[in-house]
Length: 591
Image (cartoon, rainbow, N blue to C red; front, side, top):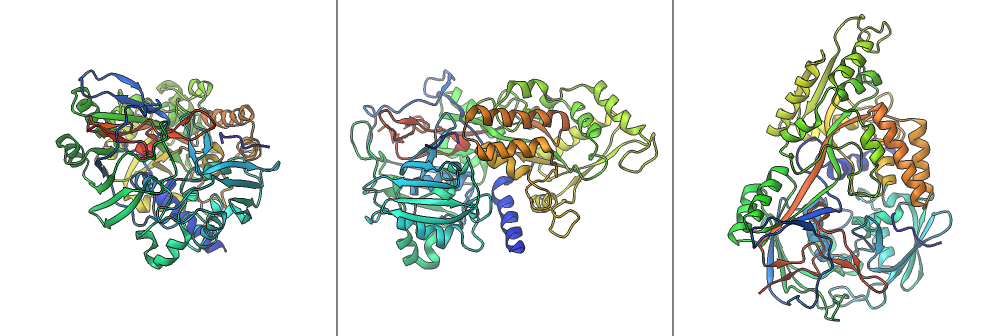
């Protein structure tokens, strides 16, 4: 069978808490920063037309020019470049993709394809995934890539104590990495997982040199050696990271010329959003990224004026609110559904600066995703104060209401959110909408770290990981296989710290199992749709809108979004500017 390309208790607790903090909920609220997807558009610069076109286009090697250097402004620094150790949010991924090529990569269609691997093939029950590496690939220091290198990295770094790749939803599900031949190895899983290939397109699949890492010792995270298009020359923390062309890079363009096109690539952390955009406008740097909708709009305005170009993406990650379904009164579906009907999503999107950029969201997958369902979009609770009031009144009048109050008493809820100015305004909007249908809402401002910790809870509550909140503003979804997303977010409560809502059902559990065991797209799509349709009725979480991101650049930077994956015959189009992250091998500078 070939791969379907769509594809100790205290230690566990520490790992999952870290995973939540640095990855799945790094922007854990309804703010305007977060993920992305393959739904990219570019606003053309240079002629001032502001034309919006698809960025998913193959590069023209005949036009490409070799040489030159560009500087990229990122929103933040990353603590380490070693997979398993580094906190690779979007800024770090941009750097890592210059240093490392992965075993696999995601294409423009959302599917995962072999990259450094020649093939990735599972066995019949999906418990073994065999990777055959391409021949002749060298690290930037000239040493060869082998299966033994991959095993050593796995054993020493990826499943090491404390590694953020070592959890049960990541490499912790692998019981053994077995070397079969010089260029062939197999991941042996504890149980079958149809989505395992998805992990190989992320941090767990990045290829780095074991020998170089061992030689560097504790400095491995500062002196990485990979098989990517560039090699690190120097890194001054919180200032700049300088790279030069990898002389041993394995890829060539359509003309047979060795990639990359650029001579040098520099990354600079510039945390202030306005400064980063101004630096691109002035030419101090050539490329910038933003994960904030207000800056997406500013970059778009500059592009429409011909000052620069911008590449936008809207992804599966979206903002909204989560309900703790174990805490009254939101343990009652009438209350959750009533609160959902009481809010106007378009007004909330407008508060976050997303009007005209991001549409209201209705499910865990954006309209650009292959997993998106129009049926779910149609079924999502619409703004309807009358229906909201009717549902809430039924709870109010119920003598057995879960909050223990006397029939006729008003419903009272608590809404927690970090004290960001836009989130304060968002919280006040929720309070106003719910007040219009008689719900008393207490707003609590809480810093990001305790906000996340309260949602996770601890192992000593009953049940474990129940969480210590009622309603939190939150971010949900990710650009990954639906099994990975949904099994984390709706797994068993007592063993699943990432099930923040504590919502479980037979329907969700059964369909997650289909996602784990099936490689048939239609069957898996039906499972996703069934789960999402249940959520329109049970509302474990509410949505505001999707997250827009943008990569913006001076007009002489070419092919930021047109990167490709080598395939049999024609190259496969890459995923463009997913999360404002790209591969750098095919970017070139018009001299």
